[in-house]
Length: 162
Image 1 (tube, rainbow, N blue to C red):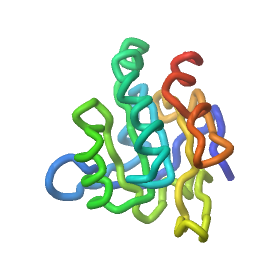
Image 2 (cartoon, one colour):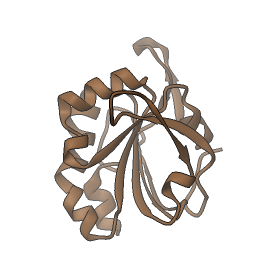
Image 3 (cartoon, rainbow, N blue to C red):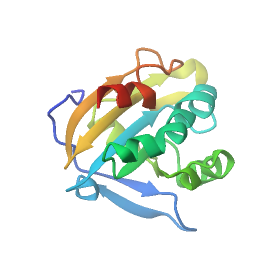
Image 4 (cartoon, helix red, strand yellow):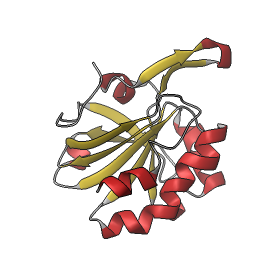
């Protein structure tokens, strides 16, 4: 079942890429009592993710903070090492975005945002989405129809909704 507005985030553990060693982040405890943006994308180092999706949040990090967002979190079904290397290349953490690796797709599957596209080697990857979460409850959700598009799930769309 796909998560919807009004739903509470499910229990799942992801891996933070800050620091030199992997560290677990447990949802929904991690977001309890806070207003956060979570955006999911299909793959580190992929075209649209690198050139459009993450940059939309880097450009708008301060505007999101001005609207009361405590943290912006990027989730991808990649391992710790791929996410850390990608973060180093695109400067997401330096720009105020928390990068979380959902290597086993635990969170992605729990919210019903997984898809598989064998022709490009995507198995249990994340659909492209953006959600606003307040105290663990989804208050806005924007799901992209195609993983190669980034308009509905861009930071600007979410800002317009806030």
